[in-house]
Image (tube, rainbow over all chains, first blue to last red; front, side):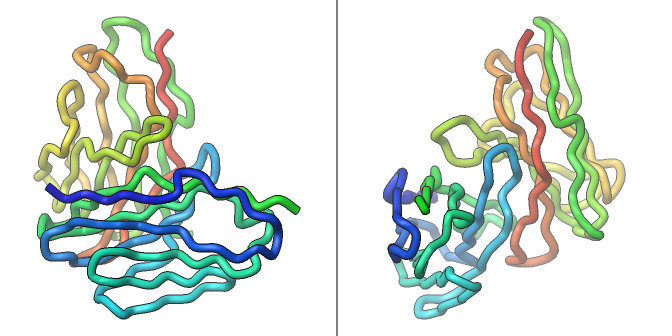
Length: 110
Length: 112
């Protein structure tokens, strides 16, 4: 059975304090590792797809990396507007089906 | 602008009532999905459809039904058999292969 676990459950940072979110996965035949941002009362917003170990993607203050067992979302010098829930999802051999982690709630204080 | 539209934003269900949640997309995506999100839990897959007139059960399909008569539309019916329907329901769509899923802004269903 595919499994995705995110840690920590919640993270509080001061503005400018860099940190990382973790996503551990056990998936047969990984077809893609996806990161999403979700604001309260909204649907998840797509951020990144990573397909193979060693791959990295960047967007503004966010950088996602992938190993054979984990993915990290690095946040550099965060701002209060980066506060959101960050979701990780893995796609395995079952076409189109994603397994989601429970999310990390990030709060950035000014 | 292309996107996914879910309606209504809020919905209330009475005991013994079936309710239908709407999902429309204009992204020309073949695949569509319905998820349920509960506080502190990840998204759980209810049903998915890879092509018109075909759909498969996800991990928590009991008490739900769907149809896929048009490429653009994938409505979800929450039946009276679903005993704990209070949740945030999300619809998504994706293109071929390992393309990312894109989500609507959800429908919050509550019980009267």
